[in-house]
Length: 240
Ligand SMILES: Nc1ncnc2c1ncn2[C@@H]1O[C@H](COP(=O)(O)OP(=O)(O)OP(=O)(O)O)[C@@H](O)[C@H]1O
Ligand SMILES: [Mg+2]
Image (tube, rainbow, N blue to C red; front, side, top):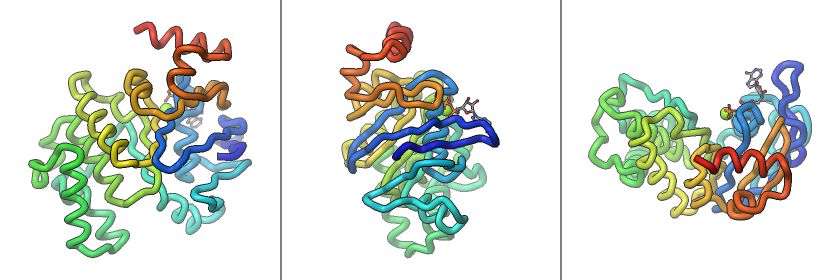
């Protein structure tokens, strides 16, 4: 992202965001509520209009100017939200294969094989035929991860995927994300789970009021923040 600005109506909420993520890296966006973390992910997906700057993926500038070009940009990424919104009247397998079959029109045997691989990866090999409302929140969120990956994104965007879960279910979802990290998935992760961020992120970007205040390795940011705002934020959240 190069100097990206974004607005909701007349209100500018991203005031020139720049950062780089290398293939296979994990970047974590952290910062106070309302600092613009979700908006960064939404802007990347073309869900919130970008009013300045640009986004480049693998050397190509993304074009968010038409519905068609937004679809092309969106095709490179997949996003998973706090609310996983599975189709409740479908099985796990149907949830994961629906878009690849109906929207992408990829061959059924390939789609099915990949869905099985992904469900195995997220620890749900035994749940192919379960309906999503028969699953726990953590299991549903893992189906949502598999569903996002079934579209073969170059970059996976995760927006507080564990925040709506009961504490005992958080770890099973984080384990699934760890597996994706081991597979070399490029990910931008918004998370309040600082222990997890510290463990998996190559780079942490601390945002406040729609700006990047400081970025660096988790260790550098958590232990020796350079700015007062980062120091203040991390001293509050790392205490508990
Ligand atoms: N749909 C919307 N319409 C208008 N303003 C919005 C909208 N969504 C977010 N905002 C504003 O944009 C700013 C950034 O919000 P954003 O959701 O990106 O923050 P965040 O860092 O993800 O916060 P949180 O940690 O609470 O999820 C906030 O000031 C928020 O009030
Ligand atoms: Mg948010």
